[in-house]
Length: 414
Ligand SMILES: *Cc1c(COP(=O)(O)O)cnc(C)c1O
Image (cartoon, rainbow, N blue to C red; front, side, top):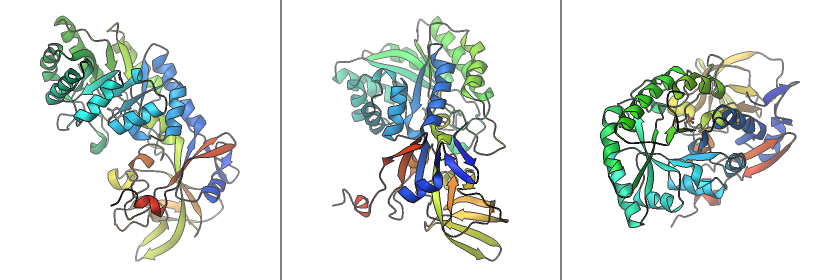
């Protein structure tokens, strides 16, 4: 559910017409709906936190400080994958006691930074990383709280680039090796074994892969208990999908929780952690773009817009589908067209062979579901200043990031 809807012929973010925002802030422009974000946070809190769990927002989906501040105010924690994300999370007021740190390539400097800030735990992805954490913690005279990221080898049935929990991918440690890993960890002087972690992929649209994975993890927890290794935290990861197209009907957080509850009941005394990114912010954000030109070549129609793959990479990177709606509905014919950006790459498109109303020059289009992995994946490719971002709350709105300038492009160049 989100609050981007037509009222009459005009598409609104909550109570603000999107066309007015495009006029005021220019395009390309990311627009977020505060009350949609809040709604999603509350759904997760009800499903997982009320029963005692911890919500850790995956910063890589969207790390704008205004969004992080909302999450901090709601008591959410963070799932981070770099020192930079730790910096952002702390700056927004997120408690380090609710920060978990994943990623296969944590550097010694990043590990030291996170130790000094006293995060909840490192989700460790390899034996060598564990050794490094032990060494760095030793150097600081500390004990590092860790969880092992287990690779349960289940197929999340999503795009291969956002699938992580299968053996052929770089993430985690195979279940078979986990017991040995925990034995080693438990014997290390500067390691405190705290939990277990799984994250099997992103944009999952069914509960079944979560359940399959959790079964393997619970089985492992049983073996660990038998071996005298007691954990306090069970991190289920993120990955719940959102509805990009009408064919997708992903479960809501409450459905995920009730689907997993029978399994979770089998283990007691574990604090459950969830790490959603996309399902919190994905459909709470849209990208507004202006049609610059239209063009027809042979068989194909192109709608050339002012947002490109540098602003929203998902279609180019994953062939991802984003619905595109006109900011102003009117009676007109339709045509099949590619919606493409100004970048000098044939892979620069927002939609391919899409049936759309016949778009007019200068018209504002709204790319739906662009809140997650949108701005956070954007770049300056083709020396394009990055877009502005604005937050809507009811009938008010305020900028949460300025549009970059040409000067920003050369900042730091020597
Ligand atoms: C990316 C990521 C998430 C969030 O995934 P979503 O699909 O956005 O919910 C959670 N945990 C880890 C470890 C991740 O890498």
